[in-house]
Length: 240
Image 1 (cartoon, rainbow, N blue to C red):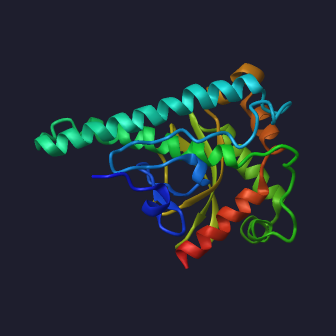
Image 2: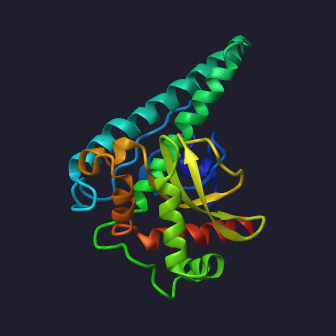
């Protein structure tokens, strides 16, 4: 089957349900194209690799994006190819392994694609008081400080490797803070990730070594609240 653009596949709202259960609102078209031939493309960073210093160093960003994220893109493309072969041959003997690989690499690719856009130079701090995300944080967490405390505690205490996630839960219509182990475990189906922080060691070890809490605290200096606010706006349009 011929290639279908990412925009065509996701529809006008630009959405995708990842293999790990996250409903990931689409990144910019620069992320590349997802085709029914199971080809995925590494998104370009929206800033130079050293743009987030001193909070996140350029060497870490380059390794993280060019090697780790690229590895998930290759892994996802490969497993989708294997699933194509399985369907054509009607041999599903490896389906458990392939499903696990699709969840791992697919969720890794989607979360990283959000992560890069969640950060920007000369940003961070609290979201603008007039923004929808600021009002939602006040409503659902009782203010920015309680939210920041919960988010940082959740991200710092992820068991092993994973993510801290602020998401929109559409059934209750509220924001939630979640942990993800690896990329795909502990998810809640239907939650739309708005803000994610990668707490795998490769995301911070060169600068922060084992001080994960310091890295998560530093992350708050580079949060692109405009991007988070836009993601919430799209989530509300999608789910209402």
